[in-house]
Length: 433
Image (cartoon, rainbow, N blue to C red):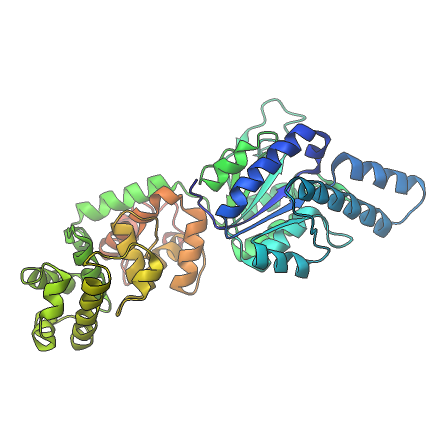
């Protein structure tokens, strides 16, 4: 199983603890997926039993704090039940313990933490602490509806929402100890600040969890700005090709050529990179051939690319390492690529995407366009890559860089972008300013 995310927090409704067969099914699923995720945290709700204890406390005249404490105790018992099923009995009593467990074991099962907090808020807080890729809320209903499905038969399931739209829906929701109709409003606000997507799905079908992890949306997805990524990338690609974007002239087939072109392209215009690469590849076919070439001869071939002498030195050493250490085959892992001279994160991701691996290469075009569209807000390319991986389906990652670059070269240019001619102007924040 390949998942869209690596760090996930699941908020599991306490209502499911009335059904032992469902607990058993979730325990089996959790045991399978926990080893495939970098960090996986499950936060359990209190459900019917918690509400019964809270009702008894009210009859006894106990205050709100005491009622909260009873609710927290039940959520922790539910967490312990899962723990026993998974042979994992350490139930953290604080955020510090939960994060420590996640960093040590990659897995944690939690209940409530503090009086006055819902388990949704606990899930959101932990997600922010570990910089999670997603929070998944598994509840009794299929997702978020435009109106109460209990009262209206024509209630419509909303497939995608922005944080602001969800906040508006939740703002009319009343809450009290043990009662949060859909999701905690404070939890949404917290996740919105960090731009961590929230998924709502029916927890009565445990397979929905797997579907979300695979990049599908069986319920409702909430993020900064929902868009149809298939449609966006298709429109970008069509427009860029129509305008003869230079990036589509890069038709290098072999991984070695792709790697060299990616390194040469750094701080160099695409038109110059293309010209230099054609000249270089007419003389060099293999890493061994490049390694034998003199540094001065290589530097002459790399003119007029930026920093051509420095690149000549690094490319010669890179070719030697690939020929000797890898038998002239290009490494296919990010770690190995990053160990090569002249290869940074962007170059590594470009190579991986072009050889069919799931990677998003973020350059100035990708960073600029993603922020202009309004699908995210980030200050650095590293942050852009991380956030795009959260919201773009995994099957589109490898196409994203070339599409954005082509679109950035021809339409969404750094200066004087062609907003009036842009096929995305209706959904773009920058075009509306």
